[in-house]
Length: 153
Image (cartoon, rainbow, N blue to C red; front, side, top):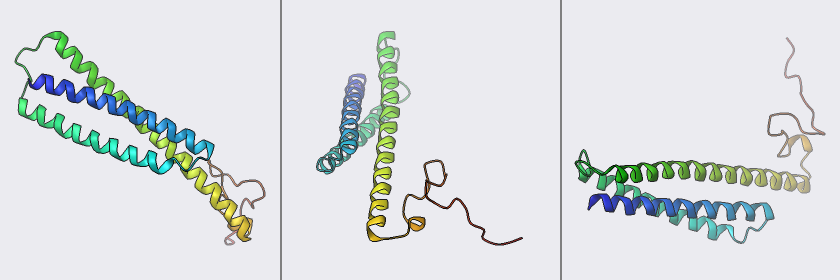
């Protein structure tokens, strides 16, 4: 019975990880299109899915702990293979979702920097003091002074 519970839990985890991956893709498309109206709904959906995943992981750990050293004394090879395949799929999906979430975070950061830079220009803040003074690799952006002596030796 515990093996069946574990299988159901793992299948649910896979389903939710695939769903959050889809939500992250919609979020990216919304960010790139400048459609901020959908973002609060998408964020709420991501948080809800994360809460469900956390509950499933706790249930999976309880199921494992209750089973002791083995879920079955001698499980059939096909059952062990199914479990290993599901566990591998979960790890793969977690890595994919993590990378997608980090990518979206970088897009949000870039959009914030761009908006801040535009606001700085509109406020009349000198370019040297405005946001977005350096590129992604630390180089000075066009029009910015590349260096200034701080002291003489």
